Image 1 (tube, rainbow, N blue to C red):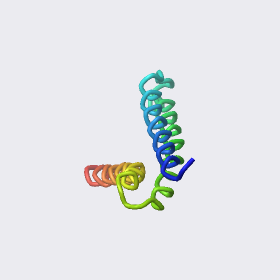
Image 2 (cartoon, rainbow, N blue to C red; image 1 turned 60 degrees about the horizontal axis):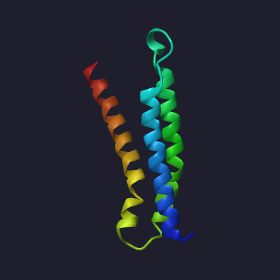
Image 3 (cartoon, rainbow, N blue to C red; image 1 turned 30 degrees about the horizontal axis):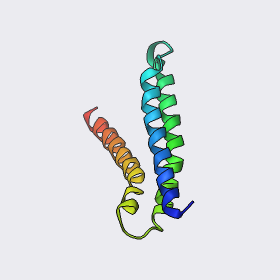
Image 4 (cartoon, rainbow, N blue to C red; image 1 turned 135 degrees about the horizontal axis):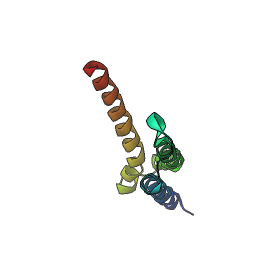
Length: 100
């Protein structure tokens, strides 16, 4: 398997795992009572997202070795989405801190 094919395979695996996270979140019934109701759904979602982080990170690392082009830019998409999620989470925490 050539280097670009590995990156494409890793990006495909990353996409499948990300979609699986959302499908699992939607199809899992919430369990628990009170405050903890639904935490099982959240933990399953985060487990699938963590699993997707591995091929996404590998695609990013391998993609940096590719010549400039579309595939190199696509290999950065998982890392960019993770960074956007982290920034969004931090902004949410900051907003909640000032609104309380």
